[in-house]
Image 1: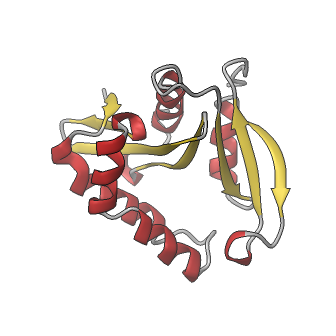
Image 2: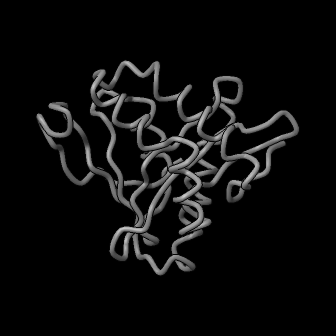
Length: 163
């Protein structure tokens, strides 16, 4: 059984490590994109993000440590979902979907009306998780960030999860 909630101060280093371990091996991103993303989610930057908005980093945890994460930021009345992921030992247990549901629950407290994000077009796992959580694909951006193709997604409170 896992517990979900905002990351605790003493979990920030573990969160940065889990994000690094998730991002580094991803074949969906070119080397430049991976480097840029890793630079954004150091322990110091995550501490600053959470100091400004405690709901910006949600985690799933159990007695053995962090199982998954969902990192976001307030963006002019919306929430930008930066990253979500699950530790390899915890995959296929619904943790990613639970974190996306927990993120949606933060909207009222953050004075936001929707969530938006992107995914690489070939990241079928992320696309499937977003669709199951009720996200709707709203655009395709070709040759965009780092010269790669992306989908843009949105979730609104009116959205109904399909799975």
